[in-house]
Image (cartoon, rainbow, N blue to C red):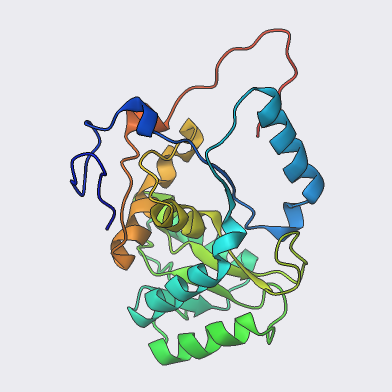
Length: 238
């Protein structure tokens, strides 16, 4: 638990002076196939050009060991399982979930024993499966109205060197799994995102609730906004 240094409250947002507010920059480098030192440096240069100096710069990869531990904790709690469905089979399951016609959309490995998932997850970590041969999925709710809660992937296998961690890992966490946990570990009060991420708020809080971790405010008025209209300027999505 982190306490406000001004009023010693465990959940203070109002009394802290503006000078106490810090804005951090994090690279969510969870997919080694799409990460490159060139892109990382370019983003840093662009931020510096805008005149902003972040209070702290971190990478999701800084927390890979802790994230792995949290994944193991979720398996032990019965909230995650190792699945061997192919990408095509998962897509078919999602179509069944979308149809809501009485067919079972669940993975056949959803209810495998906890100890078995623990062994299989360790096997994933040590390269005993090919890419795509296994994933770790969160056991949420395939009947939920929000599709981001349809047993999303928490870890996948990628035999690809990471620009920050090299070949230390062959399994990598998903954004939905890692983002909320790292926000909590870094004691983030407001996690800013654009409107397309609003639907992912449910899974954000579900993960933190299962792990009993600190949950940031993420108020709608603070975390979501429409893209501004900018004229005569070249833009990219990210």
